[in-house]
Length: 223
Image (spheres, rainbow, N blue to C red):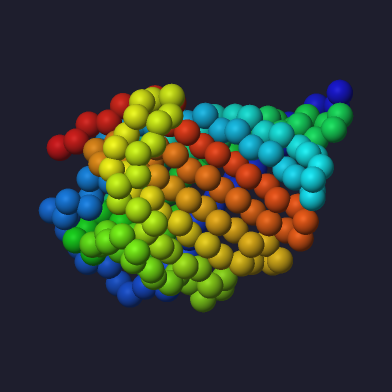
């Protein structure tokens, strides 16, 4: 079998069309879904498949690690948490084996108004936004290009993964269409834990790619 090693700096970010963000710590109970403390770390198992109609054309296995490594000051003057992201996947397609090693940095903050993420410290608008309060059935829009939609599907989801069983999870779905691809990303988050499961589905004509992440272990401190 052929083996190909690919290094990519691929960032999946949800673009926000929002206004300037409020500054300061958040007392909102919704912030418990996003425990941002330096030293927090999450490790996920990844498994996926690529289907072309009824035919399986590829499989994926891997791990991803997220870690809050410190804080920085944004160019707008507020503090953000630094999150280092690493994804290592093995993609098998016929006789081809591809090792995909992806690393990137994101910058996060939680306020009374929601969770905000930035790919760079100089971005004037957040590129990822989950508005508070979190209410079952809430729907909001993101971005002009491509247009994106967020929806809270549940606030009582029970999820069992390798790291344990988590009750009353918040289930969030983001959807968008870009370059002929229809994408759905569904995330389950537990209070004082963070993301415990994520299901990414991309449809391109008859080709459907599904990647599931499940929490394998975590180290979280909540102040």
